[in-house]
Image 1: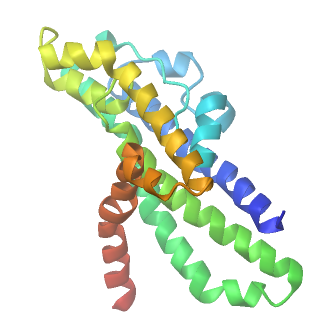
Image 2 (image 1 turned 180 degrees about the vertical axis):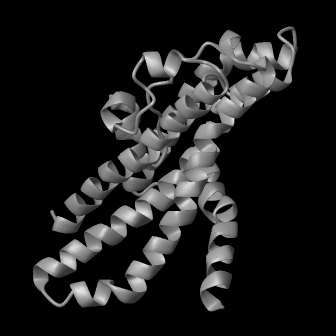
Length: 237
């Protein structure tokens, strides 16, 4: 098995730490600013990945590009403004991810343009340069995927919390998403995993059935487009 395979795995695992830990820290930070001391009490107001990572979500994110971490415990009743606090806390994680993607894309472009070739003059240097480029590339793409994935309005994702902050408790759509959201989410993840497995075994049409695959493609190509466009314009000045 080629060493680049192991480099890709290691780069993916490191990238997950730079994506999921800041995401959860964002929730904890905003919840604290909105008046809830619960995240601080549970030791979640930190960037330490060990405090945030969920083993299964960590592996899923590294292998297939979407995953999750341990939810930050909050008590919305402590918010100074209940609905505003709930909304801001819900979107905080994905906002942090988009900022990370924005910064990482610049670092990736600068590394490829100015450092990759210089580091690749030796055998070891070539693999190290490949590792750095893979890590930066994964941080960028994973950040965008987590951004979009977590905004799906399915319980217990951030998207549902946004719906929760904007609707009344008796809203039938909200009640449906809360009751069946987790089941729908599991089905989507399993379906995506099966499609990916079938593709690896040569079943080419399976890619057309991968629902989450379309979501991830939307994340990298559409949601990521403003970042590409912005930096391309700035760097061209």
